Length: 425
Image (cartoon, rainbow, N blue to C red):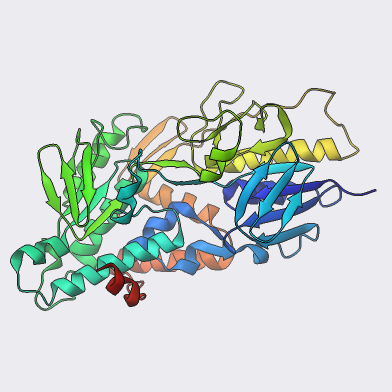
């Protein structure tokens, strides 16, 4: 008897966890991703700010599933999904499925101002992180050889738009990079003269965190020298320019960390979606009217069995991936299938929220406990090491973090891709 075919789109946290838990005896699995690696996105900002190198936070998908014999991996782009025909069209082939798990994640969202993407890159991939790191380092090298004081300051200015965890972590890391890591590296310029400016439209940063953590994060960023603009929506972004309501900031580097939206593939699906394009799913993570199709992670808009809105964070995606795998295993296996028409509902376990700000500086809310400073930073470090894929990655990251902590040194400061910089300038 032919085994049911499960197609999993996306090798992020949700897709990976689903594949790990799918039975080897009862199903055949095809995992599709446009990249050949699983990316630990919470540490992308460390690559962008020269703290870690790319292999430290990424692992080849094939090496993760070396021993899973019922799983095939395709490095392909998903071009379309036909839910009625149970078919996925890839860049070079088509796949038919019995079960489909959509775990394609999210992309940077500009709230309808997609033209800003050219001048203010987001941070969702290794390519994004490499671009940001390259352009930050190159701006300081250019500042070393220019004489015009206005151009000199523009090259040293860094603007981060968005006061969520990614924006806060980027701003803090950039402040440490300029104030400590590169402080003695140049002869003509003083990197401490760089301005790191964090812009947030809301009244506070880290608005999803409980009080008093947003204020504590604000104070820690200010102590690092970050300039923070609250209640300040962006009016326009042009090349090297951020226009606010009553201020225009010139900066060689502008990074967008203010919003995300679902992968554009969802636009062509005739199913219910939220304003960000996320697929609104049932309590079991399935797509309404298509019980064989599931959406998990950032691409899903999910309210769990306890009416809790599942946030777009890695623990949520991991838990959803495990839950969906459990449903498929029970429906395709011989033991204890669900009674007809019933499935277990997903319940999200909130493991807390945390954001790092700098050396010995972080905020965390875990199990009702609110922490800031060194204790929160140690907890943040431990949690992120725990979730890294592969012992080599954990060892490398731990050693680099220890070295950076003791010596204020970051080794991942090589500039590559100069031809791209020359083309953009």
